[in-house]
Length: 222
Ligand SMILES: *Cc1c(COP(=O)(O)O)cnc(C)c1O
Image 1 (cartoon, helix red, strand yellow):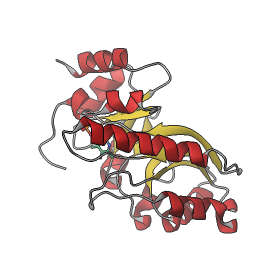
Image 2 (cartoon, protein in one colour):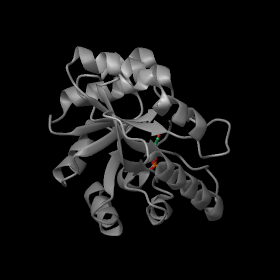
Image 3 (spheres, protein in one colour):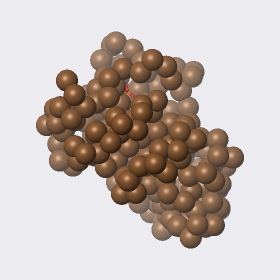
């Protein structure tokens, strides 16, 4: 099936209140344009340099989502244009995003990445860490960021129950965090679900899915 047909099928599978981020990492500009011409405006990348290059070459009404693990020293390259940063997993990175957003006179939307998978290799904050950050005075003064929710990745396993339980955990954490309310914390979004598990994620409360290979075909690397 073509990129356009894949997009139509996926859109038919997800409710209206769930946003679809087309994960275009490693894919060429021509593929992104094909999706764009089929009405897709939100794209996700996991490498800052690749995202910046694509941003420069593609239409300016595309929303760019940084979904990969972040190194603070690279935040500056995307601070002028990034739409939403999904993978924020440290206070240090939040402070750096705030600093770079201030330079560009912007407020940058972020999600806090929580670790829900058991796998050692997965990044993310614990719920305790997250609450510590939200409770701190220093956090409340970061007025150039706006945290709009949480992001998580389930384990790469075949067992649907494990995946479902990890998504349930993220939803539970999200509900717990909803009681926090500061100028820069306005939780509405749960970013969970990829090509292999977005249907389960939506059943468990996802409001944003990040789908790559089911739209663009499989990747050889990364
Ligand atoms: C690559 C990636 C995706 C998309 O993966 P697919 O399985 O191709 O849909 C989603 N989220 C993150 C964080 C990714 O790195």
